[in-house]
Length: 637
Ligand code: COA
Image 1 (spheres, rainbow, N blue to C red):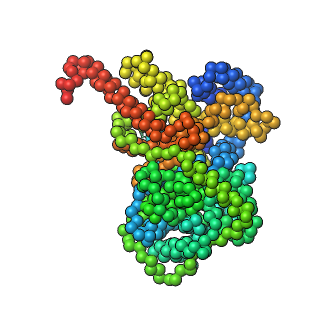
Image 2 (cartoon, rainbow, N blue to C red):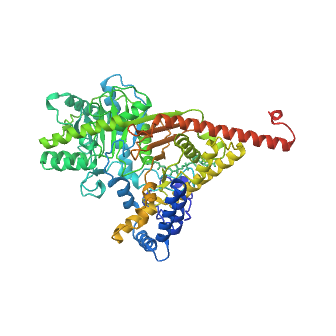
């Protein structure tokens, strides 16, 4: 395991620019270590027969002079040459080669607290403050003044890579016929963008935020947003809802885009959107309730074509939604940055807005500002056909989502810390326990682990379905064996220890998923055929993440959620707070094996059982201690 140097003089360093800081390169784990861990991770998740087959394949791959050694050597060379040896392989595999529609399948959402907008101007005022916050944050990014983050929790104190922040307002995901491309404004010769796109009634407007070298104030922005809202009301001027196409599968969208690109008006409109800072979507009332679950749905998919589903442009990395009914938040294209970066940025925006809201924003600009411009589209009958199919597919996707935001209120992080356990490991064990309760088996599980301790680091996977957790959940559920509490507690502790150890392995760059991906991609470049290891059923199954989980802690009034990554899977995003834990569970209705509400209920029951186990075992240990001290525990109270 590589030894990372802790940042000294943390306080003084916190404003230090990332440019001055040298982070270590992400290591390539030893080949044999990865192969052994892979076998250990899969042994209890596949049949005995399959395991035997897989073991033989893995041994052949890892044998001296075998394919594994050659590929490992090439990966080490790549590591030498590149800033981050896995980044591009990972980006392609995780996002750019994935042709699923972005809403639900890929783009996470952050939901703000419900806002009370009495009148339409309140909605626009909120949007104006939000845009003003974006400009403020962008200025910090441009001057490299965003303070460097430091790791918290496990192995705390290390400085973290800040590169992802620079993708927040300068990235665009272009759909492609074979794969998508992540375009970065930074790498272009084009000037920095100084406009945002406002979506309203499925129309798109260019809002310049710098006019005559002057950044527009919140008051100016409010004035301009009012003009946009008025223009969007004009039914005669209304153009087809082109944004709908961006909600479709990537291949379908790429095909429709190619047709639209034949016309120069459309090319200009694309150019404005692609080079914008972000989108602000002024949504119409969604019509549903305003619970956490309903607001999350509005953010995840906009409610379908008849609601706000077409008032979006999913390729743009940051889309801020400000709904007339007070439903607000962000939906983001995930490839340029991870959830933690998004949350940090939004924290800044909400703080800026809180401060700005104290000042009264009036629509009284000193100078007469030029009116924002509506983006024009020329649509052939072919494009109309694409629009109709995109609308239908979005509708199906929306209807198929089974989602619940569930707040577990019995206890939170503090209780877990008092048990001297890692809250994250504890929650992961609870998720496994809940899944086992419902299905009597464990499945390949993904938990994102940050690699930002390393240069250009993104994430790797903590495989939480450990053999230790299987033994534990069997011990808890197997009514026949009826283990004594002390033994159950021992099994629980060893499940927590296994999870914590894997977490440390992952955040220090020693997990197996990125490494196996690197070996596979290197094999593609090296051999005519993939080695058996990567076509083996166990390997294919190991990448079907029925449970896709992620901790996204937020400290202010917001929460994060996302969809499942496979049709028969669950998405489970959790937000542990001191006294409660928020879970956002997603699955698909057309999968008979999943149910988000059942899973949420099972999580709640598992957490209650774990608490009872901890309480009983602490009672037992108090009794033992009290006996040693020669008195009954009750007499000590
Ligand atoms: N006893 C008491 N307290 C403990 C403990 C123990 N045995 N183990 C941990 N704790 C404390 C920690 O010190 C920490 O305290 P803090 O809240 O004061 O900082 C707290 O409990 C949380 O630690 P833990 O639950 O172990 O988790 P973590 O914060 O280290 O997080 C990961 C673990 C894997 C979630 C984190 O490393 C990570 O990678 N996060 C990024 C996830 C991500 O990328 N999500 C978005 C994907 S798009």
